[in-house]
Length: 433
Ligand code: URA
Ligand code: CA
Image 1 (cartoon, rainbow, N blue to C red):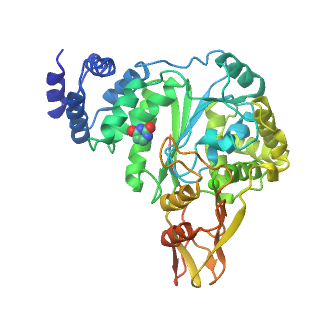
Image 2: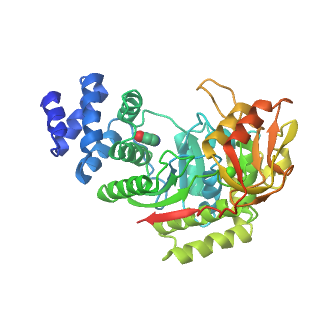
Image 3: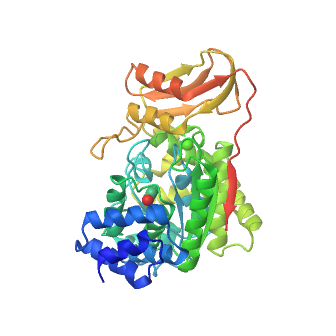
């Protein structure tokens, strides 16, 4: 086989075989196929697309380009959740203990964040003592015992995806549905998922700003999952504004604890119940979505979801008393209100620039090397559709510096107030099964 012939075949819109796709990914991972040929190939995919079978083969070729996590010692069906990003998305922190409390095993490998706010590990590290540096053996034991554990990213997982993503980033080929779908699915499968629930975000703060594109991406991932034997379902949810109220590491941990107790923001609670119901269903712990949802509501109300959070934190060295006393989480020195400049209705709240405002405070990393401040962040006091009075607080800024004029300016630029009444946006636009 010669790479040049395969580039030509894709350029002309023909379907590649399984052997051809595996040859390309193997050659690229080993360095035998150079970046310039791979660039031409990804550009051909960008314009010609890929068939369902090509997408499934590309995904599995990337899965096998490196190590895979063996979760066979974990009892039960391992369901993983993936979100296509967003701002202040506290769902992972809530869903883990929530579904663990009804017996769904959560064996989660997580990363640190870049940009916007922290990743799941950063958020959890705001709990004093909590750490993810545990051995694989202990990780498996904890999942079997408590139904939940989180470990840091280790090993050489999907190296083909790593190289390819970096190449796509500089060759204007990130935005290709077959390439995004296979990239995301390969990472979940390599991390040991038997079944996958996807939360595809749509709207101004999301990777996919357009609803039709989001639906197409969701369908592409569901089709890949089902073709390679991993039951997959997707929800398309709103990211025209941040989810919940809190954006920032310790602030989101507190918000997650509130939500596990049934006292969280309604949008966050609803999305967690919807995603969680799919997880419970795919894990075969319930016969229907309705049954799954009532199981989750029950553990929110009877304290079992909170207890699962406490057990999980303590098992990994964390101070579980934060569940009852969230004020022991890191606190910022200053709480500064962002006041509305006029009366009206809150009409827009651009999630990604709100995320950037939180990053300016130190809640997120500008570069991989940046240190983050776990205490700082934003708490939204108004959301789209709310009435606003001049001088009322729109956002509480939790800061460790006294002067936050830059953050205020960024926030005012991301929030619009209109004279006309505005409807709150829908939270869930569609589901793909
Ligand atoms: N996120 C990924 O993991 N891969 C992509 O290709 C795009 C977003
Ligand atoms: Ca939030």
